[in-house]
Length: 445
Image 1 (tube, rainbow, N blue to C red):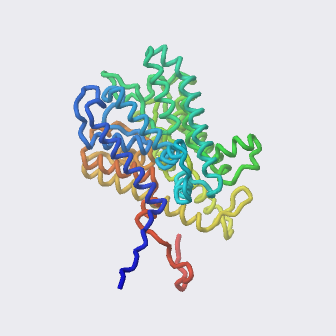
Image 2: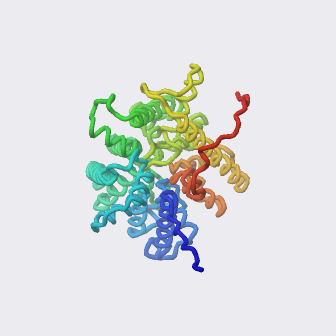
Image 3: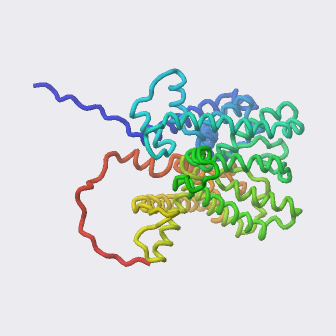
C-alpha cells in the first residue's frame, strides 16, 4: 500500500503579491535600521524603520523622522529604491529582473503580473510591462531634468540628487521630500509654494503617475481620439479631471485668502492635485478651514486610479457607484457610462471596496482617538491619509505612540495592496456558482 502523492499547492497570484510586498517592506526596514542609514550613525529602532519602509513601499509619505535631516545619503537612496519598487509594484520589478537576465516568464508569473498591474487580459502582458518601464524612466528623467536647474541654484550640487528624488517621489505618488532643515523639519514643498515651475512639474508628475498605465497606453496609441479609448480610460480621465477642478475651486473660495491671487490659484490647484495620493503640500494644511480639511479626507480616500502608482479606493470605484446611483434615479436596470453597460459584478466589487475603506478609516481613527486623546477630525485626517496612501498630515504623525503607528502601518499596507487582495490571498478557491439560495425581497432606503 503506497501513500497517495500529495499535489503541491501553488500560491495564488494574490498571495504572491501580498508576500512580495511584505518581503520588500521587512527587508527595507532591516536595511534602514543599520547605522549607515542614519546621519547620526546610530541604529534606528525597528518600529521607526518599519514605519518608514512601509510608507515608502506603499508610496504613502507619512514619516516619523524627517527624511532630509535624519536619514543619510545611503538611507535616502534606500527609501528612493523602495518608493520605485512600491510605485511600479513588487511583482513588476521582480518580473523585470527575470526578463533582464533572459528568463522566460511562466503562465503563472504572467497571471500574477496581470493582477499586479490590473491588466484586462493576459495577452501582451510582457509588452505592456516593457512599455510601463520605458514610460516610467522617460517621465521621471524629464521631471528631474526640468527641476534640476532650480534645485542646483538653491542647493548647489545636492540639487541634482534632490531633483531626481522629488521626480521619482512625485511620479510614484509617494510624497517623500528632502526639504526639511534642522530648524524646520517636515516642511514638504512649502519653500516652493510660489514657484510656478516646481509646482507645475510636480503636479504633472503626480497626475501622470496616478492615471494608470493602461490609460497611458490609450493616450499614446490614440492620441486625441478620445472616442477610441477603452471605457476605463475614459472614466479615469473624466473623473480625475472633475476631482481636481471642483476641489481646487472650493479651496480657492474658502481657503488661502491671505495669499496673492497668483499664489492662491497655484496653491489651490496643487493642494487639489496632491490628494491623488501624492502627499506633498505647498501650503499649511492646519490653517485650512474645516470645509477644506473635510474635502481633503474625501479626496484622500478616493485616491488615484487602478493600475497606477497611486493607492486609495480608486477613481473608478467612485465613478461606478455614481453611475449606479444615477441608473437607480432614472429607473434603469443597469448603470451606463459612455454608451456602455457596467456589469453588476463590477458594482458589487465597487460597493465592497467602498465599504472596506470607509470602515478601515473610521475604525482606525476611533482607536487612535481613544488612545491618543486627540480630536476625532485630526485622527480621521491621519487614517484617511494612511489608508488612501496619501501621506498628508496635520502634524501629529511623529508624536503618536507605538500602537497608533502600528495601526497606520496596517492601514498603509492595506491601502496599497488592496483589502480585496488580502481577502483573496487568505481565502482560496471559488464559491459554488451552480446553485443559488431562494431569493426574497428586503426593503432598503
